[in-house]
Image (cartoon, rainbow, N blue to C red):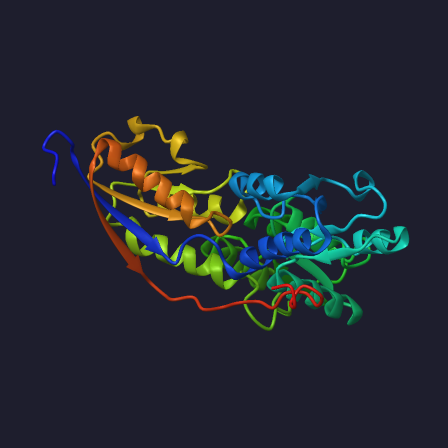
Length: 318
């Protein structure tokens, strides 16, 4: 039954949205490790960048730390989906720690490419965000000095390599598709012989979620993206919407919503970053329904059916 006191709000919900296969796998690894070994299971770095997920796993018996020296002897440790430098599993082995690597297989693919390119004697130009765990993990796959980081076209213009005809580039998996294309074009213009990756490094989930936002942004008065401020792929979704001329906000939970942002909004776009669970989408829709008469429409741009295998030893428990 409609409520004449509530303003109408058309809600366009992007699909795909939310969890990707790599995030699903990483969370499963922590949950199954707790089942197999019992609590506590230590996790180096946030398993994925989402407070709700981290808090859920803490309640089940996960303890999150930033470095291995915070992990006591004799307990299992899980490495996050973002990947770690080679030195981290080497240290765990040296200490006799049982570890499980929850690195997303698509990040691992970039790691292997970096190793191959370095072995072939090429200097790698890595497109990514300084300080992001994925960038730190990828740099940790190769010897110091084998890779240079660029974040912008200006960085490309200022880059002066020792061997300009012996370069290759790789990228972080959670970047803006459009921004990265611009940076790659600048690299190829400055260094025509630069070698690119065999396939796209930006992962399917990042690309698909950005395409879904592009599809609906033009029809929306505003957009909300559910995700954490330290989630690279979530922040990129806000940027994609704003680039389309649509005001957009990143929020972590429904109770973070500022209704003043929705003043005058009649059509609202909604999506969630790859580390945000669907329960947070439903929570936000319920909150919106407190103030508005909501009509929901899902706009699907592609269907995802990718799943990644669990590490050996956990498959039986699954």
